[in-house]
Amino acid sequence: LEILRLETAESTAEWIAETIRPEVPLKEVKESLVLLLELGYLKFDEVRQRLYPTDATITTGNEVLTLALMSFHRQMLKLSVEALDNVPRDDRDISAITITASPALKEQFKDELIALRKRFLQLSAEELNPTDVLQVNLQMFPLVKKKG
View 1 (cartoon, one colour):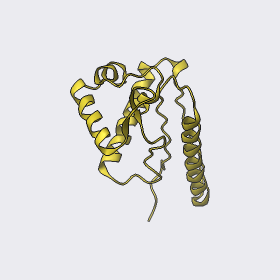
View 2: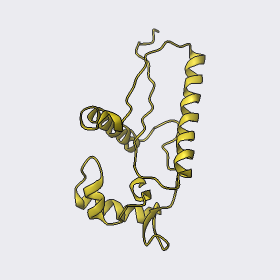
View 3: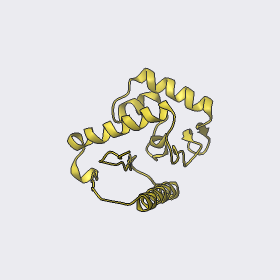
View 4: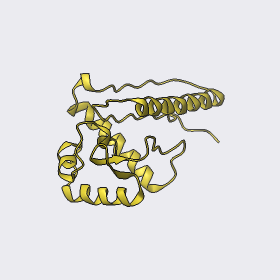
């Protein structure tokens, strides 16, 4: 969806298939456009004379429960691994930290991640002239097993 927010975007399946990373077969792009139109996530914008997303802030929320969304997150994590080799360093930011925390601090970290995600969505929605589509992944998980 976000690719169609770009001012240079074309709402043809061919343009999307040629532009998006990773590559997606043209047939799948066409099927996806039909589905997104049917679900109301895309509409034809008379001013722009092309398809345009209807909702500026589609997010999976705080807890991912469905298999489809889990699959989406796996794919995005896979893309981040591929970006290490395929995207120039100046075009990406991939970093990690390992920290310790109490249960209370872990909850505070979760709240901070939620706030950051909401802030990124807000800033993106306010952007008047986007020129790129970015994937931002935020994850936190324990590196030790719980006892008992």
